[in-house]
Image (tube, rainbow, N blue to C red):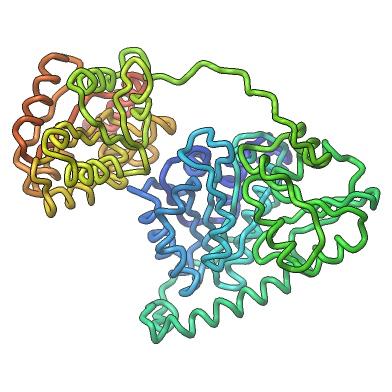
Amino acid sequence: MQPDRLLLSGDDAVALAARDAGFSLGTGYPGTPSTEILESLSALGGRAQWSPNEKVALEVAVGAAFCGARALCTMKHVGLNVAADPLFTAAYTGVTGALVIVSADDPGMSSSQNEQDNRRYAVAAGVPMLEPADSQEAYDFTLLAVEISERWQIPVLLRLTTRVCHSKTVVRPRPAAGPPPAPHFERDIPHRVMIPANARPAHHRLREKLDAIAAWNEKSGPNRVTGGEPVLGIITSGISYVHVREAAPRASVLKLGMTHPLPTGMMRQFAQVVGRCLVVEEGDPYLADAVRAAGIEADAKPEMFRFGELNVGRVRRILHSSLAPEPATPAGKPPELCPGCPHRTVFSALRDLGCIVAGDIGCYTLGVLPPFTALDTCVCMGAGITVGLGMRQVLPPEEARRVVSVIGDSTFVHSGITGLVEMVYNPPPTGHLVIILDNGTTAMTGMQEHPGTGRTLDHHRTGKVVFEDLVRSLGIRSVTVMDPTLDPAGFQATVGRALEAGELAVIIARRDCLLATSKIKTYEQAIQESCIAPSE
């Protein structure tokens, strides 16, 4: 029997709600702070799988929701950039079963290359958005998202942030509901095939749905007013609500749970009964802009508080309109590549050869730090190959020959394959060298599987993408597979020869991550044992 109270992180709470709601499928790509959702769902007995990237994950989830199944798709904030193409059109097509899309934003960039505010995506794509403030709401809002999605047949964005994802609070699960409807396909060309003749009326239907959801949100949405002294009224949402309640316990507070479409009438009524109305939010002035656009008189936080996470101290400063410089954050130990990491050999060679290195997203991005300082660019997943190609195309030959692209194994599957196609289709005059750092896992986010490992999310055997076979199938003749740690001098010489040859070349530097080696052996041994037929 499940306890009536559980101490859960926000990620675990979303997973529990997905299990309790009978989701048929969970898809996603690992990325902090969203990773644990699908891992937890799988551990709870739900069906969850890693996809090559977020676009694929959302498209698979859309297909499931077209058939009446309840589907969950998870990703970190930058992952929604990759999935934006299907997101915008899925809002037009609508869904039959519930489709809940989790965007886990990372204010303060704890483990990200930017701190974009994905609340903007809900407005741009035209999908309803819920923002939980703690684990209980993460659980409750996941279930509410199912209700909204199935009632209006529309995808729902569940926007979490790092503190909600990783902080633990008490969760009281609901009693188990009845089983969801069984998946079933019904042909519906006008709603599912977005040629222009069908997309035009679909856009009108979408706006009608949003109008209806907005009216519901005004009367019955997950928004509440906490009464207090009318001198100060605060409009807030998400984790900011928790900080506000501690920083200003006597203030009147309007906590918004559905932040698109916004309950404009409710916000206006609240502002009219308080003395000073203040909007407190993390990240962009999303709520403040909406409040002011509606003609509601309210103060916004100073621009300096747009950056980084909020906390109780920063909220107190916002309340007092303090513009004084903030105390410097105490210096911590800088990150570094692990001792014995095979990437160290690679970056030592690139440094010593004086290469211009187009890098990518992963733990190997730490090659930019001393003692290597061997990374010159890092933009987004997969850009290591394509940015390097752009450099090769325009630099003078003597400089172009020094350009090398570096990409990890999971990142290569995510977004690097199309870069190789570009390399073959538009080869630079000086050729190009790509180094795939294959450490056998998605190391940066916690040792998750990917299509290049040949194991599923729960570590069972499945089809495996063999990088060298894939590279050769594209017509790249110079393909070398080697362990850089066995012969560092030999690896450096191999890189040097590839640069001098002026041809298209790929070196696969293959050695398992030291932190994952024992786990990989355990997984493989379990797979082998499961394949051994019992003796008669």
